[in-house]
Image (cartoon, rainbow, N blue to C red; front, top):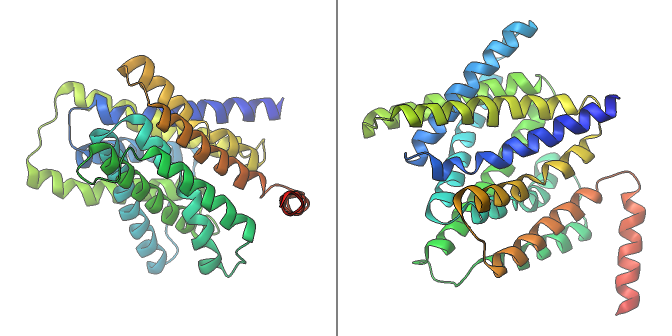
Length: 300
């Protein structure tokens, strides 16, 4: 029963995360306003949740506060690039190119945590590059879709940085506390920009941002974290990889965005490489990796 509950929680989380991409098209505001609204409502709900659970949000040191502040800035930049990618291209492009973040984690994690980079990881990274080449319609920076791909890849890069910072933070603080501080600082960083730009959101925009922040952010993160109590992190990571699949489907049904065949093929290659990388981290992956290379060599 516990495993079933965990599977239900992670699937709902992936569903909500996938739906979040649509708000880049549904909200008639620039990405800075979307990020500010999303993080404000998410931070508010997370604060209420932590208070209800009786969890302390006290920070142990000034250094921790600075790193949490930095991760909040990275989160703000990540979501800005993510929503901007969607606004100038399509939901599919934004979600699929953002999914390249494991590629960056692969090369950055060994450097920051003194871990070994495996040849298998480099092979997977090359597969992702092939997928990106297919997603790009033409190597012309005046093309809005090409620009969307570049901004989406930047969103993946910033999310990779955020993932590495989170790996450090969760050694000391609970994931919900880390998420709370990141959303609060992201809102603080983006609010002055909104004041300077004199943006006036409509009642519809505020409502949509509340839905995005409460359900597609705070609730989704809570469900994702809760699922880890009942299922393995590797399984949760694989299922959360369905986020772009859900997002592309929602964009097709609700927005009428039909991805091109190049985008579909490139996206499948990217997602396939991501799932392959995740599978390589599971128990027994060393044996699977050795078998893969032996088979590859024999074919040659």
